[in-house]
Image (cartoon, rainbow, N blue to C red; front, side):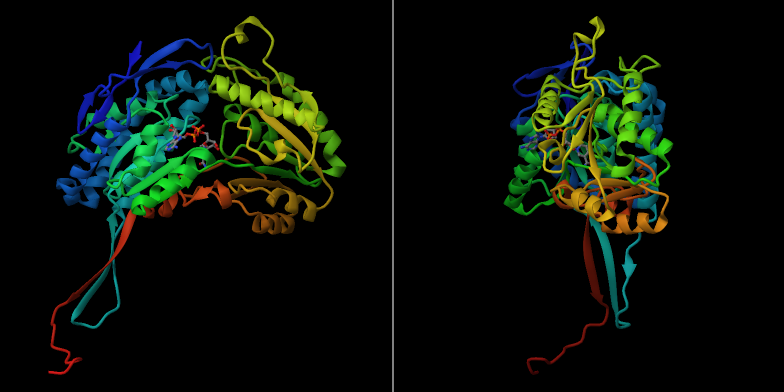
Length: 488
Ligand code: NAD
């Protein structure tokens, strides 16, 4: 049985009140680990350690030291990639193939930020000759990093790499449903010769996250998760006007025009909605299809859905695992029922798959609800499960209006062979990412984040590093002379 501990001030330790939490496999509900469950008191110790480390020798590190550190972490991720991928699949239920992809992306993220940090240089500004005016980027301070359960280590990497690279100190709090890979990652960091307190792990629930958001000793909170927690973090952050980064939910339209390559569009519609059982913030669960091809498109999806292999993520043939928790399972089934009650037509799924192997665990069939209208709850709210809701549209203007008519703005996709239309749509859609004739690709070089209620700030790309820095204007007068402004 795996047992995890907290990592505070360079020491592995149990929570002050010895709290633990059973970690459950979403595939069969068996207990796979006992994780340390911290309280606010543990979080305060970690914050204090991070504060001391920030105010101590860590400030003297150079960009070269920190770039080397990120590259070293990438090497350790590569070394333990298989172990990490197994832990991620065990804890989240996602397929091993998906977890292996995550680990590759995580190492790439550390390498990307290592390169960016190494290339970081302050700018020398135009100024009189007796003045040295420089623009410097400096670390913000103590960073509280709060991550969700769907991409536990990937979301952590998007925050840890730029935070450490920019010279900050870190307290990370993964979701208490999925702490295992962040715990193993911390073991890798513990192999390195970092000053105590630079990197701290506090596993626990919302109250630990709330302590990070409220503490006057935390300078920045970066959060990925739902809108409800995001709102309370934003309010809590006002105590010391700390910097916040929020990566929240989405309601992401996947818009298919009649002139699209339909073979590709059908295939990608499945990938958009059912990858990681739809538990992706950018999942394309809101399918919008042009009227003239709508019935044929639904027919082709209906043929494909029963052929999707559901099962344990460790089996090679599996394409879709379970959802994360009993709570998610219940919520998704509730959303499907709400859709049917509002007049949507259930084409496939909407229930636990048949068979003994699916009796235990949080299993759902890939689900297709057709004849959905933009006013229905299922077209407006995030489902976060393996459900496609399909709407019909008659014109480009109607598609655009309906797609933008959501409080969210994370990601959208457009399928068409008409480049002019593709360009018009991608300019007019109010989303942080717009794919054309594709779905889901992201990489460290491109920014990630949402418009409107999908969040504040961006991760990845140069801006993803800049968010962890303060900008300073350093002005040095080398030959000061009396000005006489107020007389002699
Ligand atoms: P969640 O908001 O319940 O929890 C996220 C994290 O915040 C967890 O670590 C949790 O313990 C912590 N937390 C909960 N309440 C808190 C509070 N009041 N103060 C501080 N911390 C608190 O979200 P979840 O259910 O773990 O994740 C699913 C959500 O995350 C979905 O809405 C999804 O769209 C979103 N998400 C967004 C992105 C993105 O990049 N925009 C990526 C992944 C997931």
